[in-house]
Image (cartoon, rainbow, N blue to C red):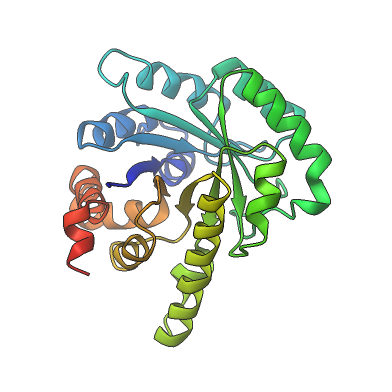
Amino acid sequence: MSTDLSVNLNAVAMLRNRRDLPWPSVTGMARIVLDAGAHGITIHPRPDERHIRRTDVFELNEVIRSYTYGDREYNIEGYPDERFLSLVEEVKPDQVTLVPDDPSQNTSDHGWDIAANQDLLKTVISRLKTGGMRVSLFVDDDPAIALLARDVGADRVELYTGPYGDMFDEQEKAQLLARLAATAEAARACGLDVNAGHDLTLDNLPPLLARIPFVREVSIGHGLTADALLYGFADATRRYLTCCTPTALAAE
């Protein structure tokens, strides 16, 4: 099966916010990657709006709910405080990915301690699913976490692939990949679907998907944006889509 590609637009928004100018256009870039074949868009609106702004959330919703892109998905990531929950309840994205970030963090760098937050997560997940949204939990490479994610009501887990993406020692990378695969297998055994994201690139994505071919979706922003400086956003998107196809994985 192919893996869906959701393009994270946070880096585009951050570049725009460096100047008091309307470009690069976040909605314009969304159209480019969707026209190139991306299956969806991911954003992480933080309280300080250092990249995605509140207005972007609604403007991107209009794009992805249009007739042209009606079959694509909108994924919104964030820490489940009341501000965030009210926002996603108003927009109703296809998927909400809950992350345990402190608002001051530069980026997500760890998964949930589900055992320590199970009451919060049960309440939040029930609330979101009542609103018709699929819920994914950002998790570390720990097979034991799968049962906990199921028990708090998650539909999916998103494997935090940062350590794998940042590792250059081949032996250690293989060990990290094995742990990610074990976690994914445990999640699937619990009836959960599996997503993955963080520091994935054209080089490390194919081995990941060859080892875990049942990953439903990868969310990629920084790596794709960096490659877009070389290839353009449309071509970079197509290159990542190629990595997500069974033909490409069979060559690994």
